Length: 220
Image (cartoon, rainbow, N blue to C red):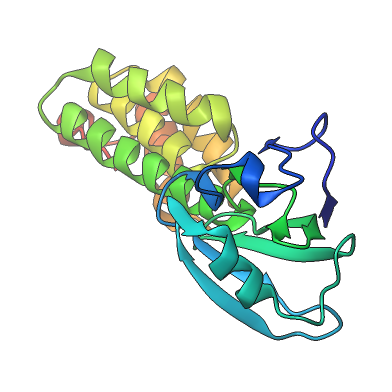
């Protein structure tokens, strides 16, 4: 929870001691991203009164009525700014006789950890599919470039390691293929595809596998 301090909050304060000092006093809330929900939380309770969505502007007199008579001038009251996928921001701001000394909030919202993880997972899956598509059309360098991006963030992602091994297998580079299949197995000892392919590569290297096996190449 944040108490109003101009030096530490994403908060722009305009001080209006008298209504006459402001031609049309208003209370406004901006946010990045937009369309965040703004609530007034009744002090001492869990009740939240919806004010509107950002960007929001309302007359100070209307805002004072929303706060209610229970909040005296000089007291602090909470305003929360919420948006799905983002961390809720709460501001403790001081009440005045006519509303609040703070007339504008400018809120920079941070993505929640869950939203960040979901976004990262989607990007990773998209890259895996793209790498597979490149591999299936023999664009091996482009496929490996996509896998590089994945493994830079997730060096033990078994599916990416196995796909890299499969690309080397398709290029008949069995030494590198076996190396990466073994890395995939280390990352996921239950990965059957990698276990079977590693065994096949060992047979090819030993010269005991049928020649037809050496001609096969699949990106798994």
